[in-house]
Image (cartoon, rainbow over all chains, first blue to last red; front, top):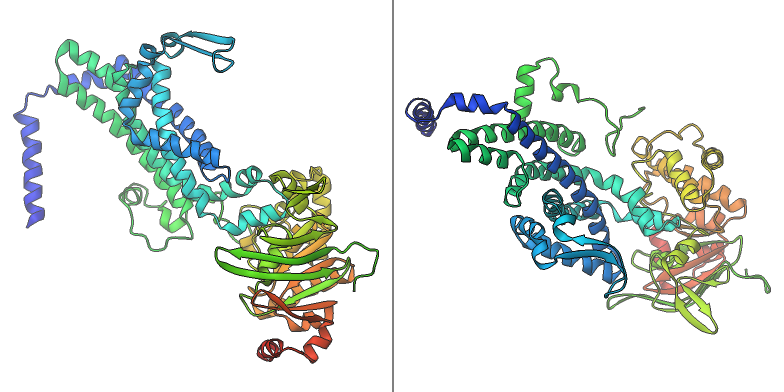
Length: 299
Length: 258
């Protein structure tokens, strides 16, 4: 009963949008592949990649500091995560964007007022693009630190003991022994973070940086086709998040091999089966990829 | 037996270890001479594994004195004062001591060969070719000359433990610590591991072995130490102690495991 009711409501809504609303569908078609939207899209993808790379690398450093026996290192990491996770990312973006207001002059030199090696106006040193990268990347690092920490903690303590007994130092042990094994725990949520980051980059319009959404706002502020342009933007975000979701699905399946059995088929698997009836991943077991726990006997 | 004039390989004087309020070692005093095989026997919770882990500073002792080959474990003596060692000094000292764990603790993302050459190439900076040649010789020594490319999950428990022994030997240690090396193995795989250890003892390696294998203790051990509740209850020649235990607790324990 409920199923039928929902179906009727959805059909009615679709019919209403298609016939009664004043959405100009040709406007959507016109802007979907326009150069301005493409330029915004490139910026969105660039921001996503750079912010994620920065987040992952800094996140690893923070996680290692956090778990360090050195109290200074672990306090600094804890404080960093407390600040950057505890404040909205949009506030952080605005902060980097307007840093020039409180620090007109930035420099690198001897601390506490010593000679200066390199310096300049904050507005020159932190252009909007850099402010966007700082805002997104530093924020992401705090979340990645949590993920990496969980990954490191998931590795059996005996691994670190064995490495220690062989005379390996802590950093060496983490890099060579612990992190490679932590990857199976770290990678799946990192995929989630990437999908989330793709959408979060839209906040850079407050700085502003001309990403996908900002370009759309520029267009609709001229022609007042607000909803049409927002639909264009949404279609592109949906397109890229769908691609990332598929990539993430395969990565997750690879890393969960041998640990989960009889998991219910996902939507993606359903589509894969539907469109590639001969290459169903469940039946073939997927391509052999190197990685912990995934090696086959005699491989 | 310790001959006068030679430095003992392990010398423990009144070693204490607490975990919180729980005192696990209540004053352990013992000596292992170079080339000697000492077997530590005792019920679980008696502190024998903790003592073994104190020898290479995986656990830090709270009181007493522990020396390996004459130098303090985890501490540095300078002008009559004692300082805690830095991480790099602790790590350097551990290269002299090999350790084999109950759970093998092989690195699962590396082949047997990579497991063995990891520490020699990264810590001792031996070049890769030479390390691989030495690793191959060690694999042959433990009877696994053809399994260098195998990953740990492709090996049986007994094979894993023999790779773990080869990995420890690759650092050319002066002293080998074995923490219940056969306790996690199926009964039919125990023999292969004990054979490797027996050969190692015959070649003159100094060994401290925590085990429940009474047969191994009797045949290979030079000295048997029976521990219970954090103290040494009884020690001496293995065959004598096993055949004729003096203490009630030793008798009770041996009657259960024999």
